[in-house]
Amino acid sequence: MSVDHFWCRLPGQAVDTCSPEELGQLVPRDTDVRYDRLAAAGLALGVRRTAVLMELALTENGLHPDPAARLPVYGGGPRESGTAMPVLRPDQVAAASAFLRGSALGELVRQQNSVLARTVAHLGYPAPWSEAAAARVVNDLRELRDFFAGAAAAGDAVVVREAE
Image 1 (cartoon, helix red, strand yellow):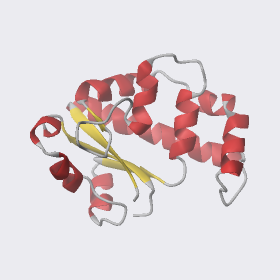
Image 2: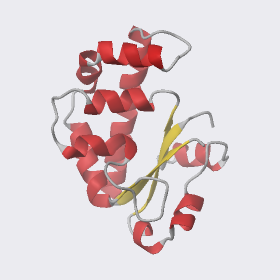
Image 3: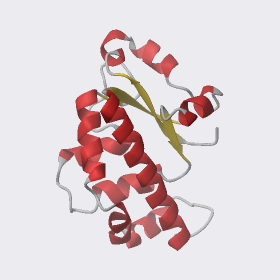
């Protein structure tokens, strides 16, 4: 696996029945061979170097004052008690899914073009912001939208993990 930020679906009740340590064991780490199998089954989604750009496109655009706009990428508000990983409960997953489904993702990225270009330069990405970079962010946002749609339909929770 070559991702630095990913989401993993878990049965909704796992959030209430698992300890923070058990949740951490259920979610693969960045070097975990389970990731490829989970991703192929639609139970995990990972991105490489676009998570911060995705968040900017979703939250800095000013078009969506909806608090659910902060849920899709980093898990929204406070983390579950005792866990370092943001956890989205099934109702939050459904809200995030509805937000993503109702958003013109390509337009959100276009509206943040200058912010995204500055961010790429500031963070020292290996290549400058470009049409190809914008297309990668839009593609990752569309994959995230589809991932959350599947999780919402199944009533799943989602745990968010950044590579350590």
